[in-house]
Length: 317
Image (cartoon, rainbow, N blue to C red; front, side):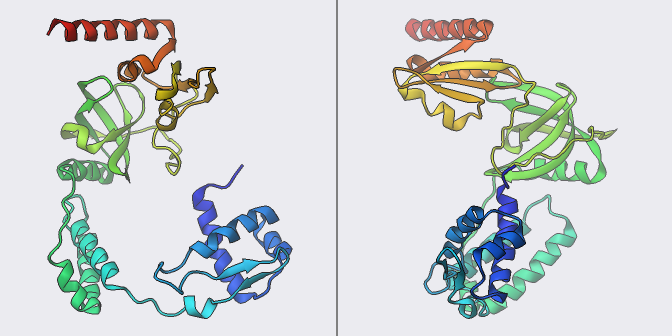
């Protein structure tokens, strides 16, 4: 199995230490020590010269290889004590102050963050003054975040009214929260008692939330690796086939899919899985003449009916 991004990052961090202590190390010896192929090692070495403390010049890793041995030309320069530039100090201070205002942050963590921020302000000097004139406003989801965070820490169930843009409707459900995470937006992963399945909820789409006096008891689940895709359909989810023209090829970039076959007209025949096939009707309406749902037949029929109704409503205005 290919290593994921986290495994590769860990290996490359160890590789930096290893090479610093072994100038002129042989490629074969290093690959053997890390349990990887020489090609994988060379691939890592191609990335390392783009790493360093910043891109301001002179502090990237100057590492190269002749295919037999590996040379690191500036280990002492990179190992020098780090100095924060004015813009870096400003960005760090603004971010720290913003995080300290999050309502879901535990008080002990907030106090530790404020102490670290004070030390950074003292070290930053004049740069700290510039950062004080800047602020960050988070999405209006702080109260929801706090309730979810409390539910996780107290292992309690939640009741939520949740807006689903795919179906354009609000649903009420009870969920057992598993974890909070951020990928662009902030999400809650939970076991949904309505669907009896694991579901992901975007916090800014939660219209109402209540902490229940019921214990949360999600089944034992392996946490998903979210480094590649936030949406990871199950192999048990229903299969949907969509055909798109050249103008709809973007669907293959935005929707996780099992396969995408080229069509003679430059389009694609895309096979994907989703726990809620009906949610793809909106995709069909968005595609218009650039695509259509092929299977399952009942979904294709409902998409055509929805398109005809939308067209009739438009023409009657």
